[in-house]
Image 1: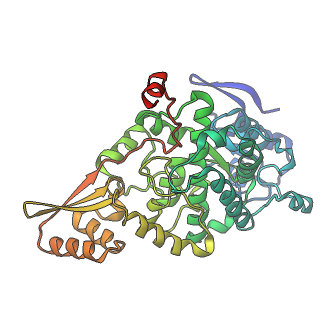
Image 2 (image 1 turned 180 degrees about the vertical axis):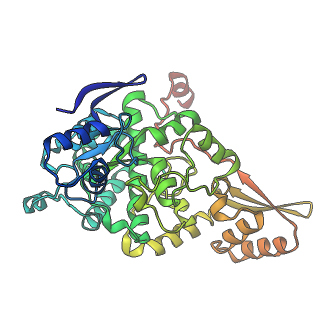
Image 3 (image 1 turned 60 degrees about the vertical axis):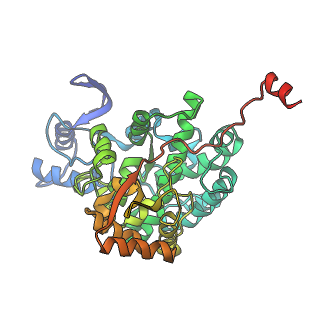
Length: 417
């Protein structure tokens, strides 16, 4: 048996692991594979046993994205043992609170009886069901303004366990192959996943803290802490937003780069997923700045929460772009002593690499979505004269939860009487 119940690597204990060398040694000793040396066996493991696209995948790297290496320092698990490790991690929000035995194991094909339970193998088959169920959940938790969410009531309701938990549990067992080369499906699917994961993360934190008072440092941690298992691999909010939707951008890779995004704006450095990372192939082929008007970040200045549909994704993104660029709190024009100021949501600063690295480019981007003809004409005229200054309005990160009415004191009761 090559599996170590516990292996200490530096100061970190690893359970259920074996090294690349141990696996190759075992294969040489126990398997009859003609004319195969260590290099050939290593290639075979990479091609079949470690490859999620292979029907013969059996092992999973401890460090996701690393290829199989025949040495003592790279460690792997059998998929069953890796699944057990995932189940232990309470920050993986979609593998807890439900009996998962009715699902197929990662990467394995299901049988027809699963269809009776609305369990899907492929992301393209799952998507319409996912979309409709999210719509039902949002209808229950969202107030009429489409911005405020009743997190507390939802967290404490039976629908959290009856609707949300079983729905997101299915993400772990999906074949995502259809996303490759299909940016519309990638955007529609991962924007929906991002938004529900954000809500789920806020609820998960509430289970522990019993409040929604989230400071900026804790919020930054939240983006890297909570995650979903999707297709057998882990995705944080940062992984989805920066890795998948923003074409493999490394922003959010650590606290420093996250803070740098909010202070200086996100850069266009493509390094988040290595090419050997199994998540790399799902990265969007093109950057679409409109995603920033669709990704709901559970804050007062967040874009409205919506469900996105594959067939209408581009129409919807155009719609939310116009909406975001037409609201007074996100964009406004003012004049002071003959000088004009265009004040924009700080969101345009965070992602100015997409909207335009210069003020002129940001102005031109915004102009295409402003609907008020008078406001649009003023901005165009003053921009052409060089008489327009761009400023960014601080983004309000306060959680957009439904506020509880303050209790009325006895003194206030007496005053009313």
